[in-house]
Length: 487
Image (tube, rainbow, N blue to C red; front, top):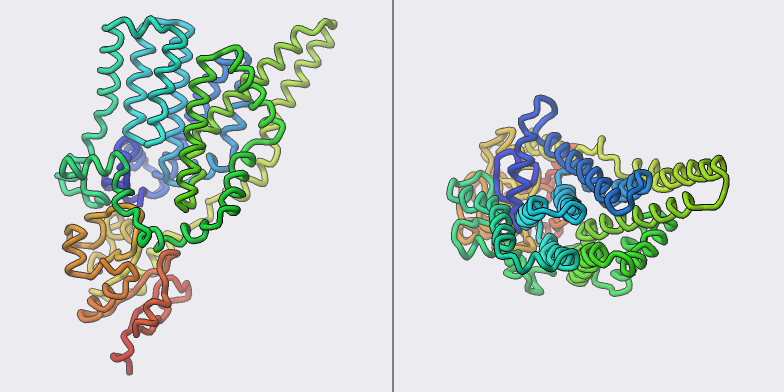
């Protein structure tokens, strides 16, 4: 969905991600690869930039190049962050914005002056246009500034200047209603009115669909219903991203910061604890990909690792030993610090390598080559949007998405009709999230197919009186044939 929305400047699911849409759209003009590849590449570029800024922030905290590099490397090679850097997703850009805010605040602490402070305010505002986790930056930034120089809060020109920059940072939010009024080709939330705009940017659309019935249609929620399973998954994520020795170094460094650097401890602590709390809430709700919300916490842990390793290097430098011995010890320690984050990286690469993953392409080709002209295809937030909107293929088809989501959708449920969810429900029966009613309505007009997926239960169609007939060898596309019309 993001690959398509980025390519056509659409509007994504809550919270809309306007900054991501506009920045990543620029990558679609690159002269190589297809638009989907270019959207994936943007995540990698944002990820590399985030790791570099983590290094810069780590150096500000540790004053040691090797320590900063080791902390940044540990964060960059952490499994979840790496996994988001090779697909079209929003989390590497989130990490970049968070890292930039921390780095600029550290620069301000070292140099003072109003310019870094205003830049930090601008970046906080910009981060709020991208992901709700960035809300944590507001109290974290205010607390950091207060602990470094509380006099800032008594200077009206600084307060107004910072507030003004933060509001300027929020300007990308205007993209959402503007594109909605321009009838964006793919619009998942329709923020064309003030009420719908607020529902989108605040995540209120999730609350609008938070009934037990709606959550029950999500297989991932059912799979995570056991408390012990949730605790196990949380533990695996919290303690499985960094090598154990670096976890220990990071935790000890966090204690050190609490004692020696209150400002740094507060900004990293608020960020980490807030992300953990948010992830626990999502896990409790049965949201399977809760772990991606921990990425800023691991970023903070990477900075703590830099602090801890920096302290270790300073201790080695101060040893009462000969120059040659001390130098040899520092070289050995530096090499070890850079090597430890790489432990397991080869295996991680094999797990996260997506270079051969063409599932989306196979789905497109299955429908493009297997569906009859003028047919209706039921699908759920699939690469068929990419087929009709980006590649402009098989525009003779009617695409219907009657299957449930965890937020309140509006205009992305049918193609080619730009109609609201209510209108689509009246026309296609999308209120039935099994898809059976939509299939029955479509079968009155011609051939109907369903593109398989994890939220699509083929047995529900069989029980409703359809024969589910695989089309092609891939067994991705199925024709739904009413039994009364066969033979």
